[in-house]
Image 1 (cartoon, rainbow, N blue to C red):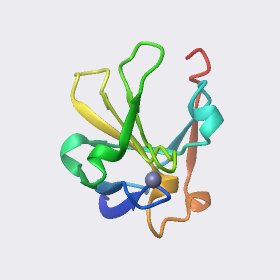
Image 2: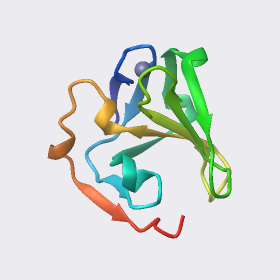
Image 3: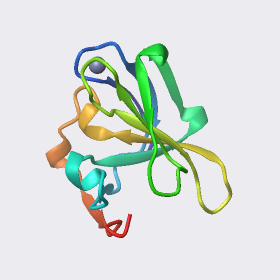
Image 4: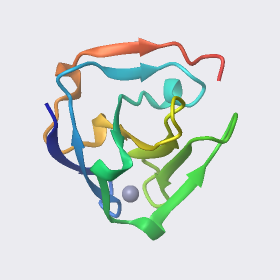
Length: 119
Ligand SMILES: [Zn+2]
C-alpha cells in the first residue's frame, strides 16, 4: 500500500514528497554507482513524486547509457533520488533513495539484491 513520505538531502536544500509502497522489497544494486553509494531504492511514477525544494541545487550526473539522471545536492553531495524512464514502456519514474526518507528505518525494510555490476 502506498504511503506518503517526505525526504531529501543531508543539508536540507533538496526536499521532496513521494508516495511509495515500502511493504515490498527495496532495491540494493551493486553497479559501479549504487554499490559505492549504498543506496536503497524504491521506485515511483513521476506523478507520485514532488520536488518541494532544491531544483537549482541539484547537479545531474549520468554514466553508462545516460538513461538515468543521478541528481545530487551540489552542497552536501547526497543523491536522494534519481529520474529515469521505465524500460518496459518509457514512462517517467523516480528512484527514491529510501535512506533519505524522514522517519524510515532503512534497515527494517526487505531488500532485494539486483545485479547491476555490469554497469
Ligand atoms: Zn544538500
